[in-house]
Image (cartoon, rainbow, N blue to C red; front, side):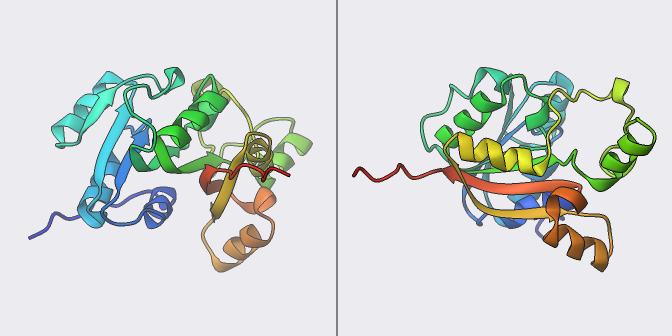
Length: 211
C-alpha cells in the first residue's frame, strides 16, 4: 500500500500542483520536509532540500528525506546549472539577506523556480496601518512583529517589479485568499489587495533579439 500523504498548508498544495510528476525538485528552506514528503509520495519526484536549522534537518533525515544543512544566502554552489527541474522557495524570500542572489541561484540550478511570498499589500494590513497605525495579526500574519523574522516587506506588485528588473519571466501565478468564493474571486481580480499570498512559477527571461 502506498504511503498516505500528509495534509499540507493550502499554499504548499498549490505549489505541488505546479510540479510535474517524475521530475527533480530542490526545496530551499524546506523546514521539516512536509512539501518534500508530499511530493515524493504523490508525484514521484526526486526530492532534495536545504535547511539552515539543524533540528529541522534531523527531522527530515528521520523521515528518510535527502536534506542537507546550509545557508541559501550563500548560494547553491554544490549543484551545477539546470541540475533540477524545479527549485522551490516557499515563504522564504522575504527572510533572506540577499534576495537577488537567492533567486538568481535558484534559476541557475533549476529550469523553473516556484516562489511564494506573503503579501504585505493585503487589505487588512493597509486598513490597520491607516486606522490604528499598527500591523494586524490575522490570516498569514498572526505573529507579532517582535516574534517574526521578517527582513523585507513586499507586496505582490513589488515582486512583479523585481522580476521585470532582473530578467525573470513569470510563467504563471496563483493566489491564496481567505476561504470562500467571494474572497477567491476578489483575489483573482485584484491580487495585490485581496490575496494573502502569491505563488509564482518563474524562469530566466529569454534574451532580447539582436537587431
